[in-house]
Image (cartoon, rainbow over all chains, first blue to last red; front, side, top):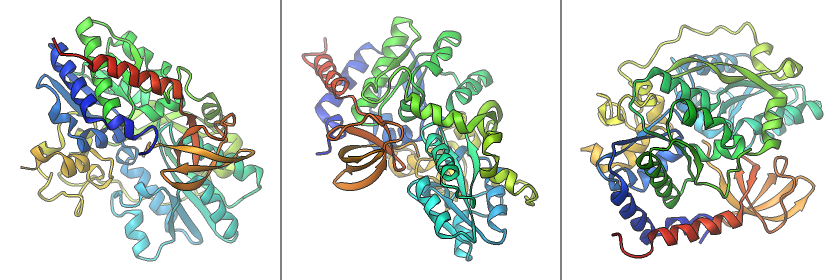
Length: 366
Length: 74
């Protein structure tokens, strides 16, 4: 029994919520789960198939490694090919393919790539290898970015001069706006990411409820959290409301975590970012402020040669990330593209929609 | 990737804490939640505590869920 986890897996309570959902849900309800961790939890717990037919869950662009554009991975691989470089990153990033290779493949060929649990471990690697340049490949949303910002602040304070970040950081609300502006998917609500919101709070989503009239519920990650959030979204559309509600109140405050946001803003400033499948979204990324330029690998290695970007042939990862198709609607899914032989990042990452559907959603494997 | 797991603060020295995450003691930074106390639960993400778990809200949610699902669906 793990406190704050096990109690949210109660089968009887789950059945009880599902019955209430069936009772009140009349209107069509297409909800996008924005976060990749939600995608996995929903698939793993069979929630997609337990809901009434009018309630559809669509996976969105919330797997940070999946939305990392090939060009950013190609840049990282180009830095890795320079002499005396050690690349550090989180484990999720290792197998994700760029245009021609991945960190994992390059490591197999002898490149020095190290997986770390925390950015602070990467600073230790830099201290222990003063003759090398230690570059951290920074990927992630607002949950992760404060920890990367903190590593830069600590490296500066401790005068660690051989540590830098190659950043492909992204922020979530502008991507939600971009999807709504594209207007390709008929959405009736968002399950908003719980741990991004733990940092940024509930206010950054208010424009979605106010200007687009789309209900938003910030959801936790256990089965009861997700079912209660779906119930709350259905209640909003049946009542004709569109508000930002927080289901995951044990972790999410209206202002999030102002200390973490402050650290993030101290080091980073808004920038445009390139999202796989969506393209460049204004203001959806973060770049390192001039004050910390010495820790910005993009500025430390300005002359790297990056080969022309190419996409994976036949892979519809981009369409999956926009919620345009379900993973099983891609011709490669489960045939030439599987978790053991993945073609695109949505099948590579454990939080990718294709991997989650392949592993857990029996119906779609047939 | 945005996974965060609850862990109990068992020891605290400045902003460095020992946190029991599912039975494993991990060295965790309290940089973002300096007010966290020994005995409280924090949500841990890549070596940092990102938020303190609000026990009152957690209890309130279970109470509301039990009320919602109690009795026949009519």
